[in-house]
Length: 202
Image (tube, rainbow, N blue to C red):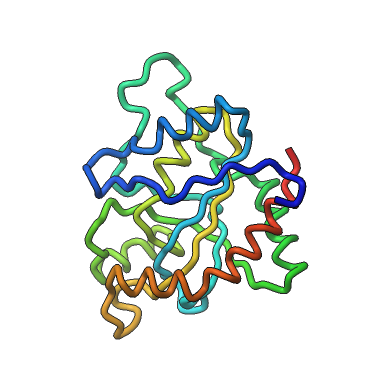
């Protein structure tokens, strides 16, 4: 892609599927063993900000690990105590914003809250998350980021906003709606993602 060697994983294993949060550990370890240095993640998320409606794109600047679970439980050695202060690489985020500006695509940025799922959040939970500083909420990404940082990978993550979160609109939330909105906005997100990959400096 644009002169870059890219390995693409189709989908991910979510924690809500089996209750474990290390489902992507082996895959990421394989990528690292193959020489991958940067992990670019995408996800579908609900917005906690009316100024960021469905169809918007948001870079993750930080995250909230709401379940306080880690895919590194059981690992030995001091390396498991991973510094997460800059989990989402600042230089990669600058490159992403520059790529979005070149394509005249609005690119938001904010804190992503990881909820275990599979149920959607309640309006009360969304109010709590807003107070905690979250701008989007979803059911993935954080476990993979933890593993990636443990492996020494630089991380960039992009949320495709598929809906306003519970209590912020009259819409009934469903997985089918999430998939439909993701598909409808996929072309713009894909084009931006290609530009971002080209802009990344290793």
